Amino acid sequence: MSDLLQRLRGRGWRLTSQRRVVAEVLDGDHVHLTADEVHLRAAARLPEISRATVYNTLGELVALGEVLEVSTVGRAKRYDPNARRPHQHLVCSGCGTVRDVHPAGDALGDLPETERFGFTVGSVEITYRGLCPACA
Amino acid sequence: MSDLLQRLRGRGWRLTSQRRVVAEVLDGDHVHLTADEVHLRAAARLPEISRATVYNTLGELVALGEVLEVSTVGRAKRYDPNARRPHQHLVCSGCGTVRDVHPAGDALGDLPETERFGFTVGSVEITYRGLCPACA
DNA sequence: ATAAGTGCAAAAGTTTTGCAACAAG
DNA sequence: CTTGTTGCAAAACTTTTGCACTTAT
Image (cartoon, rainbow over all chains, first blue to last red; front, side):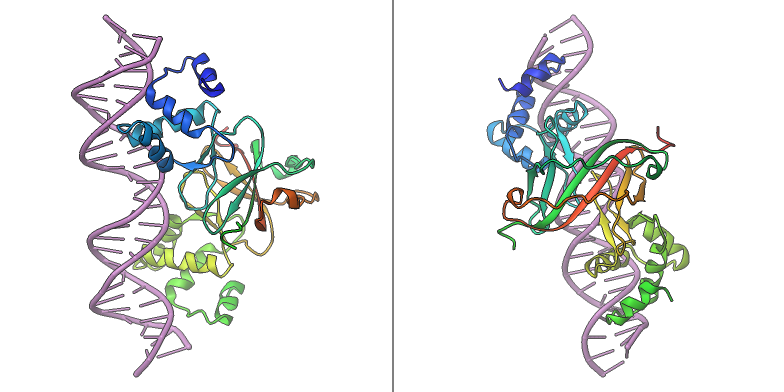
């Protein structure tokens, strides 16, 4: 069983075949699927799985902090299972492909107090936009 | 006439009352309206303006580089007229409010060649996520 | 057994599109 | 005038929801 499933079970997550399949589909590096893509791949293994369950499961994984929702501009949300190691994204403006990147050192400094407008800042997200080799 | 309208006219943009109203609604700092909010405010001045025209106009302004689409996670896109001075966003995870911020110096270093996967990187986008005073 | 999870189908929210009527240059 | 723009209404897409049925524990 994957680390992910093991961790989830430890948290009292009820393990169903649908959830197992969704977790399996999300496994891996550089995986940034849309909900629909997850459903498509999950259905290949478990034909009767419903869209609603995929959405429910993805929402729960996000709430548990095991999966991240990737910001998009207009397109459908993408889900990133690599929530444990901080990283940034390189997004193709042509086809929407996303790659994880781990820029060298550099501490993307926190936002100075004077620029916070009273907000409580929880996370910083960096996205590099450009064109992938195929679209360029 | 605003700078924006003047620039657009210079580019051969046909100026209609609908477009003028959309441009006026977008004018200002810290403006990050959704298409629907733009339509609402535009309709207050020009009651017969249609949603389709608002979407068309916003899309054109984005294509012309005069307005930026702000990344969202799930919610409706927001449009940012402050496309000329580079800046970042502080987004409330509660209500979706967006504020422009201009972090001190710091050069958010370019992505090193070895991390580009063959992509042509055009822009870097930084988003600080947290809770605004009202939602905290 | 029982509480939680699932599937279905309908609805909600956002954005796009086709086309006839209209208006800016 | 001519071509680009608008409005309408319908459709496309993504995500959410209500409820009866099923299942993991």
